Image (cartoon, rainbow, N blue to C red):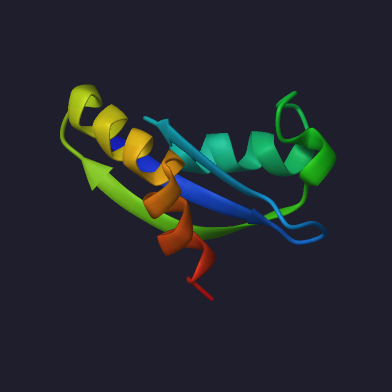
Length: 78
């Protein structure tokens, strides 16, 4: 099982989209600043999660949310 997730920075205007097989551990790494890409934007709030049965499906969904229309959807989540 894979999770596609989106997190929003509490301090800056930044949304990160990713996929993982262990969501709790991944969110912990983002919030501790151990991820190079997201460390300047920590801490984060989880704003979206969708479970997928396989990595291929999860990757397609992740690409959608990283696209313009997908990012617009995520920006409107409050």
